[in-house]
Every structure is written in structure tokens, then in C-alpha cells.
Amino acid sequence: MAKSLTKLWLGGLKRLLSIQAQHARDSVKRPAARPARPTGKVTAKVKPAKPATRLRSPAKREAPRPGSRESRVRPRAAAWASGSWTRSFHSAPAAPGRLVNHLQYGLYVPPGPAAAPRPLVVMLHGCKQSIDEFAEGTRMNLLADRYGFAVVYPEQSKHVHAHRCWHWYDASETAGGAEARAVVSLVDALVAEHGFDGERVYAAGLSAGAGLATLLAVHHPERFAAVAMHSGPAFGEARSGIAAMDVMRRGTRHDPVLLVDETVDVAAYPGMPAVIIHGDADHVVAPANAEQLATQFLRLDGLVDASGERKAGELREERKAGVVTRDYVRSGRRVVRLCRVQALGHAWSGGDDAVPFHSSKGPDASALIWEFFKHQRRAQKDGAVEHVTARATSGAA
Image (cartoon, rainbow, N blue to C red):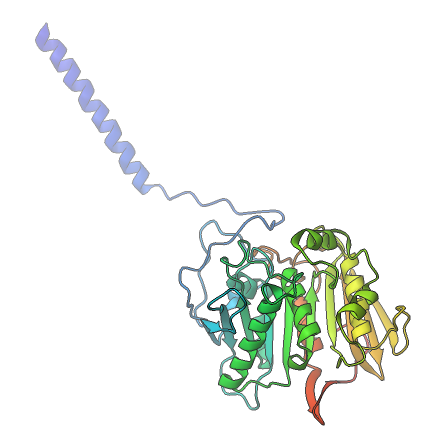
């Protein structure tokens, strides 16, 4: 009896082992399940994988990452294009209270020799962005390849601000003023080292980066030929983080022209061509900021008086494909351009919406900005700064 039970038990054990072995063989042969293909709208909450190294080869196109969101704007590897991408740091003048002031940056230079000194575009990212994401999302380097300009991406340190926000609302030498000086110092160093065209240096930014671009325009107009503010706040009212949030939510409570006159000696200011882009569905920086910012640059450029009434130039407006474009033109030359994009939230218009804070909705903001920039030049005449603007063409760029 005991022998029979033993035989039965051994036979059952053999069958169990046989079943398990067969299951293991089937699992090896069966192809791995594919990750689900993402559908629907890409939200800004999903972050793409960060680059594995700090120095990347622009010539290599990346293979799609398993499970990664797929871009609706081609090509995906546009951040690196075909030129040289170099990450480094610049030792800027030390701010009060700091022993050193190292500004991290990425520099993109198109391939091939330049027939003339290259223009330089300064790209200022927004909060919670890295320069890698900003380059990939805006695809500005593709335009650099096409038109032959260089692009530099200064990067805010997490040690200075946990969310990498620029202190656009505080022009003091311990905050935004120091950050603006560091960017100017970086620009001067790059122009000297690489021979970029010092008369064709431009600054563009998104959100907090747009705020810093405004600081550069207001306090360092002699260094820049034109500026672009995408989803940026009006300036002159906020002095603290709490006040900055209030401006972002509703715009300035005071007259934007009065704020300019309190900040700048308008009579001595050399002017600054500006392009402003904003989404009508932006719930982070209210669209009212775009209207106020446009008014402020009209004042800086001498097109409106102290009461905000237009005293020079003419207005040309175009409505096309969900975009309202207003050009303020003087003597046939475009000075200020305002673009309001319907249904666009707090994101870079016409960008790669697989990258946070970029959207495929709206016109290509990068192309629109360069189209405006390429007609602007800052020249020195009799020791004074003069902004030279090409004649405007009709319609939106």
C-alpha cells in the first residue's frame, strides 16, 4: 500500500514538473507585449525621459523610447539637428552675497563655415524646464541650420530656484538683476570667443523666461537688437513672488504706461523692437498681460504718449487661422508685433507637444520669432545706440 502511494505521488510530481517546464518554454517563445500606443491630447504633466548624458551628439537621431509619447511635430530629434551642441558654464560677475556665479548654458552652432558673422539668439526657458527640453520643444535649432544663426540656452540653477524659475519680478542685484547681468556677460563672452555678430543679438523667452527677456530689454537695450516674449507677464509692478503671481493671474493693477515711465527714462531709451505671442486659453499667465506688454513696448518705442494715446505709426491687423496679429508700423517699418492664438494654453505655439509646455496648436512660434528678428539690427551711430529695422511686409510672417 505504501509503495502504491509513493508511485502515485512521484507520478503526480513528474506531471507537475512537466507542466511547469512546458509553460516556461511557451513564455520564452511568446513575443513581448507591446506598450499601449498613446492617444488623445498630450498634457504638460507628462515628462519625457531625460538625456542620459550631459553632452549629446547632434548628428545622431534617437530611436523612439519604449512607451514614450510620440511627437505630432516632425522631426522629434530636432533639438540636436546637424550642428554642434555643447554644454558648458560661464563664470559671470558675482552677485552680492555670492562668491561665484556660474551660469550653465547650451550652445548650438549650425554646421559648416559662415560667410559672415552669425547672429545669436538667446533662448530663455520657463519654470520647470531644462534647456534640453526647451531646445527639443521649440525646435529653434532647425531654423538655425536653415538660416545660419547660433542659439544659446542659459539654464537657471536649481540651487538658485527649486523650479528653475528666473526672478523676472525682482530687478535687484541679488535676484533678477544679477541673472540679467549674467546673461549679458555670457553673450559678450560668446561674441568675443566665436565672432558672432554683436549687432544681431536677440533674446526670446517663455513665461518666466519671457519676463527675463523683458528685463534684458529694459535694462540692457544696447546689447540686443530685438526681443520676443511668449506667454510672458507685464513688467514694472511685481516686486515679490506673491505680487508676481497676482500679475500673472490678472495683469497689472496700475496703468502699464505709468509703470514704464516709473522704471525707464523713456526720452533717453533707444527703443526695442518686440514680438509678443500669447495663447487666449492661458490660465497660468492671463492674456491681459500680452495686451499690457504690447502697450509697454509701444511706450518704450515712442509710439504712444504718457497717456497711452498713439502719437506715431499705424496699426495693421490680420485675422487668420485662429490667430489675431497686430503690427504697429512706423515709416513702413514693423516695430511691435502682437499675436494672440486662440485655444492655446500656457505653451509654446506650434511646438512639439510631446515635451512639457509646448503645443502643436497655433503657428510655429520659433519661425514667427525669427521672421521678426531677421529684419532687426542694433547699430552704433555717433556713440549712440540705434535700432535699424527693415521695412515691414504685409500680412503675418
